[in-house]
Image (cartoon, rainbow, N blue to C red; front, side, top):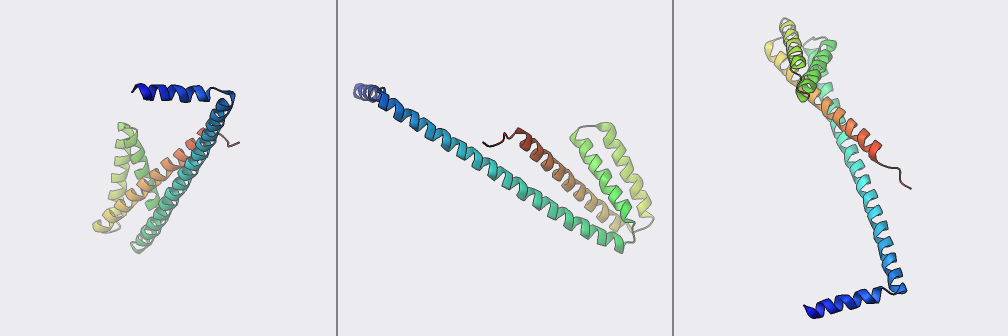
Length: 162
């Protein structure tokens, strides 16, 4: 233990020379450049991941919307009603997220009113399928909005690179 202490003290004393300090300063600068490079790489990877997630969600949304539109046409259901329905589901999801009881109740009531009016036009099994698809689309849209919000916040927090 004593020998290790003496060796450490000797190394310290050797570095305290002007040349040793210059070497130490150079090593610190190298480490700072390496850290800056790693931070930039991490930022780029985060951006790539975010873009990849965005692309995946967008593709899923597009496919679900196209399938739902085709199904609604086969059922002879007005497309605007379907779009209104997934909008209400989006409101319901946001209300749940915000723990807003009044908005939750309002959205649920709107969904039930639409369900009753649609049941007079198409069979119940198709109603359930349309409602489930609308809810899934709404969830994807909320997920997409959250991703956009995260990207926006990350963009604001990221200082410009020199």
